[in-house]
Length: 153
Image 1 (spheres, one colour):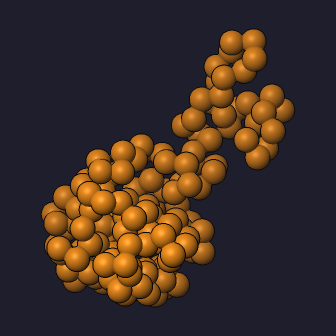
Image 2: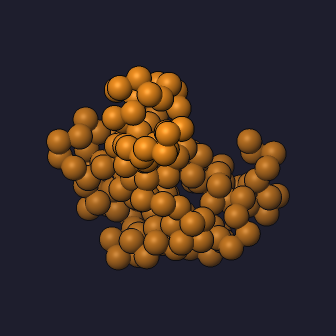
Image 3: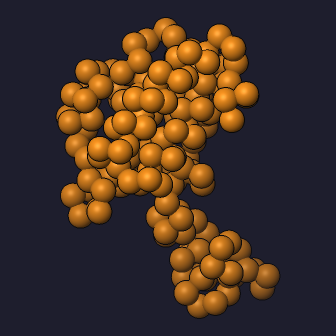
């Protein structure tokens, strides 16, 4: 995957990737850490986003923030729970700057609130709609429970 990172962004990519892996090992699970790493790689591959223009902690915190919002990690009832304050403190970034940078990432990459590939399948299925051959529409999670859609759809 690193081969697709532009040469001028490789150093910052590796630096922040290391920080994300460290944070993920401490506060996230393997799946969420993987989402953050993949989002970071996508950010580095996107021409409209310039990771070298802000400090590394801001980019790392904003990347985790985007993933945390999509996966409800700010909800205390979720198995993996973090707080925005603790996230910002870990990466030495201001909350408002993290929020603005996360919004820039979401807008530039045109991410939805529940983005496939960055969101746990169980969460995504709760919000995605299945379109059945007879024209019926229902939540993907319901369609899977009823056996109308394969479990891996």
